[in-house]
Amino acid sequence: MFKGYLSLRESCPECGLDYSFADPADGPAFFVMCAVGVVGMIAFMIFEFTVHPPVWVHFLVTFPVLAAMCLSVLRPFKGWMVSEQYFHKAEEATFISVGKHGEGYGWRGQAERAAKAAARDKD
Image (cartoon, rainbow, N blue to C red; front, side, top):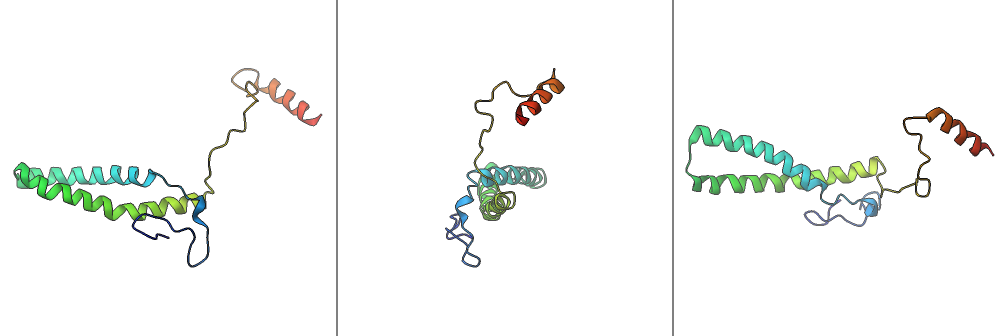
Protein backbone atom coordinates (compact mmCIF):
# COMPACT_ATOMS: atom_id res chain seq x y z
CA MET A 1 0.00 0.00 0.00
CA PHE A 2 2.85 2.39 0.80
CA LYS A 3 5.95 3.04 -1.26
CA GLY A 4 7.59 5.22 1.37
CA TYR A 5 6.76 6.02 4.95
CA LEU A 6 3.47 7.76 4.08
CA SER A 7 3.40 7.87 0.26
CA LEU A 8 0.77 5.71 -1.39
CA ARG A 9 1.58 3.57 -4.38
CA GLU A 10 -0.29 4.14 -7.62
CA SER A 11 -1.87 0.68 -7.34
CA CYS A 12 -1.81 -2.41 -5.16
CA PRO A 13 0.95 -4.84 -6.16
CA GLU A 14 -1.21 -7.84 -5.17
CA CYS A 15 -4.63 -7.12 -6.65
CA GLY A 16 -4.00 -4.10 -8.90
CA LEU A 17 -6.44 -1.79 -7.08
CA ASP A 18 -5.94 1.77 -8.29
CA TYR A 19 -5.36 4.11 -5.33
CA SER A 20 -6.27 7.27 -7.25
CA PHE A 21 -9.53 7.44 -5.27
CA ALA A 22 -7.61 7.78 -2.00
CA ASP A 23 -7.10 11.24 -0.59
CA PRO A 24 -6.86 11.04 3.19
CA ALA A 25 -5.17 14.50 3.29
CA ASP A 26 -4.61 15.59 6.91
CA GLY A 27 -7.23 13.28 8.43
CA PRO A 28 -4.81 10.70 9.84
CA ALA A 29 -2.59 13.39 11.36
CA PHE A 30 -5.58 14.99 13.08
CA PHE A 31 -6.77 11.74 14.64
CA VAL A 32 -3.26 10.72 15.64
CA MET A 33 -2.51 14.08 17.27
CA CYS A 34 -5.78 13.98 19.20
CA ALA A 35 -5.33 10.40 20.42
CA VAL A 36 -1.63 10.71 21.19
CA GLY A 37 -2.21 14.09 22.82
CA VAL A 38 -4.71 12.63 25.29
CA VAL A 39 -2.61 9.54 26.04
CA GLY A 40 0.57 11.60 26.15
CA MET A 41 -0.91 14.15 28.54
CA ILE A 42 -2.08 11.40 30.88
CA ALA A 43 1.39 9.83 30.78
CA PHE A 44 2.99 13.25 31.30
CA MET A 45 0.84 13.94 34.37
CA ILE A 46 1.53 10.51 35.87
CA PHE A 47 5.25 11.03 35.25
CA GLU A 48 5.11 14.51 36.79
CA PHE A 49 3.20 13.55 39.93
CA THR A 50 5.05 10.31 40.66
CA VAL A 51 8.66 11.19 39.82
CA HIS A 52 8.66 15.03 40.11
CA PRO A 53 11.43 15.47 37.53
CA PRO A 54 12.94 18.84 36.61
CA VAL A 55 11.80 20.55 33.41
CA TRP A 56 14.86 19.49 31.39
CA VAL A 57 13.99 15.82 32.06
CA HIS A 58 10.54 16.42 30.60
CA PHE A 59 12.17 17.86 27.47
CA LEU A 60 14.46 14.85 27.19
CA VAL A 61 11.76 12.25 27.85
CA THR A 62 8.32 13.59 26.99
CA PHE A 63 8.93 15.17 23.58
CA PRO A 64 10.76 12.17 22.07
CA VAL A 65 8.13 9.80 23.46
CA LEU A 66 5.30 11.89 21.97
CA ALA A 67 7.09 12.12 18.61
CA ALA A 68 7.72 8.36 18.58
CA MET A 69 4.10 7.67 19.47
CA CYS A 70 2.84 9.95 16.67
CA LEU A 71 5.16 8.50 14.06
CA SER A 72 4.43 4.90 15.03
CA VAL A 73 0.66 5.33 14.76
CA LEU A 74 0.46 7.64 11.74
CA ARG A 75 1.02 5.03 9.03
CA PRO A 76 -1.63 2.55 10.30
CA PHE A 77 -4.13 5.41 10.64
CA LYS A 78 -3.46 6.51 7.06
CA GLY A 79 -3.98 2.94 5.86
CA TRP A 80 -7.20 2.78 7.84
CA MET A 81 -8.44 6.06 6.31
CA VAL A 82 -7.70 4.83 2.78
CA SER A 83 -9.52 1.55 3.46
CA GLU A 84 -12.51 3.46 4.85
CA GLN A 85 -12.60 5.63 1.72
CA TYR A 86 -12.60 2.50 -0.42
CA PHE A 87 -15.21 0.67 1.69
CA HIS A 88 -17.63 3.61 1.80
CA LYS A 89 -16.91 4.71 -1.80
CA ALA A 90 -16.00 8.20 -0.59
CA GLU A 91 -15.61 10.81 -3.30
CA GLU A 92 -15.53 14.54 -3.84
CA ALA A 93 -18.71 16.25 -2.67
CA THR A 94 -21.17 17.27 -5.38
CA PHE A 95 -24.09 19.64 -5.09
CA ILE A 96 -27.18 18.25 -6.78
CA SER A 97 -29.35 21.15 -5.65
CA VAL A 98 -27.65 23.72 -7.88
CA GLY A 99 -30.39 25.65 -9.64
CA LYS A 100 -33.10 24.19 -7.40
CA HIS A 101 -32.94 26.74 -4.61
CA GLY A 102 -36.20 27.01 -2.73
CA GLU A 103 -37.53 23.60 -3.74
CA GLY A 104 -36.81 22.03 -0.36
CA TYR A 105 -39.78 21.06 1.77
CA GLY A 106 -38.86 23.10 4.83
CA TRP A 107 -40.96 23.30 7.98
CA ARG A 108 -44.29 24.53 6.66
CA GLY A 109 -46.26 23.23 3.73
CA GLN A 110 -44.20 20.09 3.40
CA ALA A 111 -47.08 17.87 2.32
CA GLU A 112 -48.38 20.38 -0.23
CA ARG A 113 -44.96 20.93 -1.78
CA ALA A 114 -44.29 17.19 -1.86
CA ALA A 115 -47.59 16.61 -3.67
CA LYS A 116 -46.82 19.41 -6.17
CA ALA A 117 -43.34 18.01 -6.77
CA ALA A 118 -44.73 14.50 -7.29
CA ALA A 119 -47.36 15.80 -9.72
CA ARG A 120 -44.75 17.86 -11.59
CA ASP A 121 -42.43 14.85 -11.84
CA LYS A 122 -45.24 12.70 -13.32
CA ASP A 123 -45.82 15.21 -16.15
